[in-house]
Image (tube, rainbow, N blue to C red):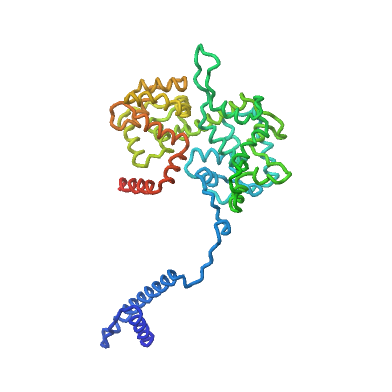
Length: 447
């Protein structure tokens, strides 16, 4: 034991530069284990230094891939929407991942998906059973996705289409006494984009243009073909890309069967298209409302503030300050009904028009009063919001308590809410240093 210890000390002295003196009296034995611990530490430091020196000099052979494609790494940056689709998609069929109708609703109303172990791999028989149970377009309602629950599949491109539907303006305000000048709603514009031959009907082939656009098939002459890694990712996301070189047809999805029937021969007219999109908006609005109403006919002003701010780019401390203002300035709860909440959500789909209306106040260097706000909403939507709801909105955003609203800040925050947090995620990824500072600031405030 003593011989091994002496050798260990000599090694440390020669290589690490640390000298130890071991007393030959009775106390030396008591320090034996302490010295061994110190010597072991020195050896560890020395070994680490050798490893780092070898790493810097690249003594050990290192094999590098010629490029990212060879390494199997895609050069295509994953977007926020792609990442979120992957996160919530719980179904896989024939190597392609899909969302169920329940997954889609959860991706809209929840921050993260419910716990699960892997994805459900559907067989052909199971998918055919799901599609047989898909209701006809004439049987559609504002409970369609909730009734289907997990019995259906939604592709990535259909997911993007549904997200667009949620941000579209349903019906522009009608102008009395003026004919032929009514502006097109977002619904009508979307329908016209699908209706490539202009016959006011959309068939299955025209609808699948959506798949072609998002599957990178419409590449320009100057664009490079996708890498092997990108092609693999496209196949995983897009059924159209996967089957483009095969004679077999693209597998039907719940949305395709709902729109065009099990044989794909039905056509979609504008009234049916409008009803589907309006039903989807109402279903999501009702789902968000019911989450906070707890079976009651109204939600509190504080709950309304929480719904309004949870997808915005405000940090946690700023959200808490907004909610505190609502709590202190509206001590007596009056409640906000589902209809009031629906009208406000539909107003958010007209934010671009509202922004144009507010420009006159910008030029005049005026802040927005309750009356100005209501008048602008009436011009943009043709509807009037309830006074209690407008009062709550002002308390959320009126930080100095002067009874006026900074419309630029309101529009910016509400656009982020409208796009379910995608705008703030994009801004944060564009400037990671600002995102880091915001995170540190939030944590310091919470201490």
